[in-house]
Image (tube, rainbow over all chains, first blue to last red):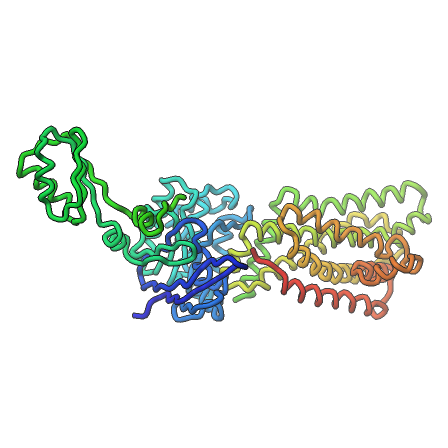
Length: 305
Length: 250
């Protein structure tokens, strides 16, 4: 099956600023693909080139086999779009927006009321846009992005500015979109969001894509080191941990032992070692690397800087 | 399919506009009120049929009001477009199969309907100030105003293309449009203006709108004003072509 999105060598400049620099990637059918990186990395520009809203200076893009710039109207009938920081008319009612959007597409119509119900907006259907909360607005934008039963859904910084509870609710909705067999392309600067939601991610910085893989794959390749920290009175324990395969270092400060190792089984092996030797511990913690660490390793700085 | 979208969008824009607290009253109510006040003043001064009453009906108050209605429609368009651009509403609409020109057409239709409604209310409310002997070509006058408004709306799109933020839309639009009234020939006939102003008046679109409206109000046939209609049409074409080049969606 050909990829749903194919981008190769995409470049976009604004004046002398290079927003996107030779970006190449593919998105497969039915996956949630995340473009991650700090604000200003070029994620939105990349996404808007793919949606046909911007024309790249160089490079080729195909979405569902269509050229997003030349066949933009054909494409827009088959994709759903949620834009970063978009607004609607202040005093448009929720049902009016859904009704308007439904009238714009040629495709088989999705039942708007049913969609509002799925997104928990039924009791807000007569509310003005300006009176919705941030989470409700985002859910409405998701409804508008799904109104034409699209094959690919684009979500740009979907949960920015939402509280953790609303964010989790939105994540569930996005997983629901994938379960209906749709492809999701999203951007986020939240590593936790990418880790929990995406099947594959592309890390972007200064307009360049640095690496692409599953979140787990990226962690395994770039930050395989795991850490176990435990506290024990048994002073000889440190010597025993050093015999575990793949161990990188064992350091002891007072009665706290920090064990670092590159093996995936590090935690299991430490636990086995503890039980075999009947070592009594008063504390046991693990530090597992995540995308945040991968980003730090690849770029030399934290994504929040 | 796109017609359905156009109709839906137009209808929603009308509803959204009527929900603005100041929208309906400010754009429809104020011109009607001013017209009534001016009519009353003219009537109280002297018993009819007096010079003042005839000057009210003949020498330009209805035309002035009509022009004010047109300008207020245009300013309202400029403001809405710039607010929509700043808020990303235009961009969100453009990310649908809606053609950009469909979005702008919907706004033009809303403004033309608004203009016609305001004019209708104004003439209805002020009917008694127009002497019974004077025949007013209501229908032609409305058509003339719609042609003028349509043409001036195209200037509105250029203004909407250049205003940096929504906050400046109304004042910049007002500064560009209102002074045009002064040299439009409404207060001082163009023939009596100094040559420099005369030349300026010749290139300003309101001059043609005023001449068309005055003529139609006073009973001229359309054939006498084809050059004015032509000038307004030319303005529309030039400004539309220009704004298509410079218009920014975000």
